[in-house]
Length: 231
Image (cartoon, rainbow, N blue to C red):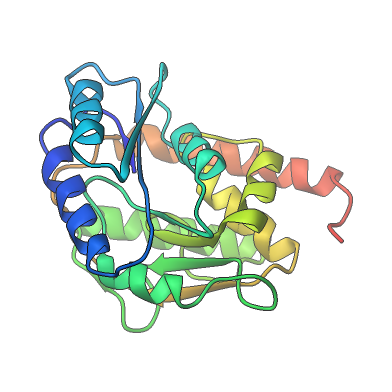
């Protein structure tokens, strides 16, 4: 769970996730990757780690969502890694994802899709429109087959970690690049429809995020063309 200035929601979110995972009677860990917070998020993450044996608090100096996702994936120890946001998590998705991903020939990544059949996107129309346009660009430019790349994901740790080390982008595009690379490598990417609603306003302005993401996608496309085909 990447956490940047999440002091308001962090305790309730982590407590709910830990309680839900304990009912599964399986070993688990919850990694809170604080990144560049200016509030009490880091102190709260450390308090939660002291209160719950299953929680680990990790910190980064820079506010970088993608880098926090990457670090969490690379230091995780479980067979399956689930990525949640502090304001967006779903234990039902977790249960389905854990039962879906695994060693080959099982899929390496399952995406919680906000757009696929059966999904229920309750966010503002502006955010839904941006998600739709972004998905269409990924389909046209990269031939992406899944309908979404952002948000919750389940990953088989060994194969996903190897891909994460190859990824060049952080910030908004790390998880998108990870999914693209997984499809290119034929590792198996599937999706599960989810319900998404806003628990708080977005941290990033759409007007700032869109140009940055478009520029990043252009650079990613050029970079992938220069790489040898995956084997």
